[in-house]
View 1: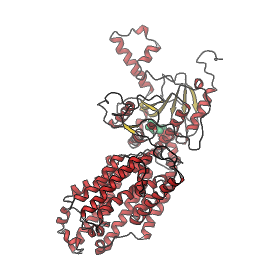
View 2: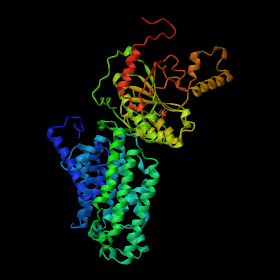
View 3: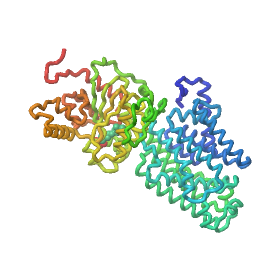
View 4: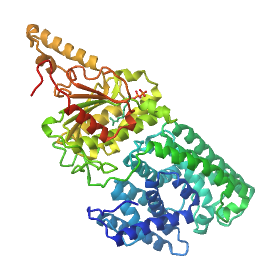
Length: 603
Ligand code: FPP
């Protein structure tokens, strides 16, 4: 574990580091002892994410246990959880705790920028069980399942984004995700039946009990009647159908790493459902376990695949960024005046922006005098698809790895003090790709711009391109993040999305023609300056250096106006293999070029 600073940025003492390690280890032991299946699934996550999985799961498990204590009077149980939750909030505010579970959770929350409000709301949903006697309908059951269980997997996705893997964070918006949660929740409920019955609870919906003519008393007295048997068989079937159908829906949207975790989860929970069916009456009396050889058959290959996939798709030294406060764009000091009411996305940006993240091997930028640096570098980030194919991965994994490479290059641009960086993220020609690749690429960009680290730093985002044909949510994120970062003064990062150079020139031509027809422009006086003023992005400075990766020697309709005198730099490596040192090398090459621009070489 690398977390060596406290919330206030102070270096941890040796004792504090040991306490934190012990706290995470305590969470791991707890999860392993009480939930071996979930513990095994967490081992499929990237190593840097596992301690947070233990902390989150231990915290929710502990909250549940506080409510389930059958030996205590009901009001005592509720009070126990309320006090624990209040202590957690105080710990989260102070950044430390004397309780191991709360200490680990506090560290995880501030270090990875987890969504505190959302987590506390999920704990409150657990707390609400205290006032509940039973659950009447499937609808009520589903609401309870979602309120308690959607937040923490989303937090894990947020962490993956922060570790360098742009994945969708709002899982609840993905088709099939809530069904998946319901399948897990129902399996868990069947597995925990003996414990719940010990506590006097029947959490299955009354409507399904009625349908099978089973009363809560039948279950509480552990009577294994034919009706109870049919009820259990029906519920096992439901859980299995939900898990399998959600697997089919989610597989299409999740990147490879999370998809392996999803697949293995469905397989392992499916094995639990088999074991529940086989157990017969024992399902009411003791927790059913999946046989060791079945677990091994499912987990062995999954572990091997996950290790390879994370190695290929996550940056090597994926550590969490140190977090500062994130502010809503509508109330932070960066947002002046009212937010644009047309923007739907609530974006949060880091305030103040973080300093550049150091290179993973400690590489430092070369010394180049500011006057010799190019003012504007433009990049064709080419070779994502070929990189993926070479590594036996689907094409979207190449784009995902490409977004990770972009993160590092942006850090390098900030470190060396570059003013403008423009990247070609989606050209008007890219619509020729399969709809699946296109929609995954957009999802990657959205995740990156909303939850990735790019905008944690002093980066002002500008979008270059046309909204025509772009999905609304992509347009919305681009506009929201432009708006949220508009007062930043560090690097201006121009992202070309749905951009075509000739289309841009044609639009300038059309705008000039309209102005001429309106009598505002004399065609005889159209100069280069006047033409440039009619370009959609007239404030964009000329490109000094144009870099394309992956060995292609073309400029592909990229910034034809602005790059007219750009120095060209072509390199062989695929974009996902690039890091900030390659940018620095490109800048050094540029300083050695003699820029004549049609005249004599400057002395
Ligand atoms: C070209 O490689 C690359 C793209 C079309 C997409 C680039 C986009 C990213 C790296 C994500 C950027 C993210 C943000 C937030 C701006 P290719 O697929 O054409 O590769 P190939 O030539 O090998 O097929």
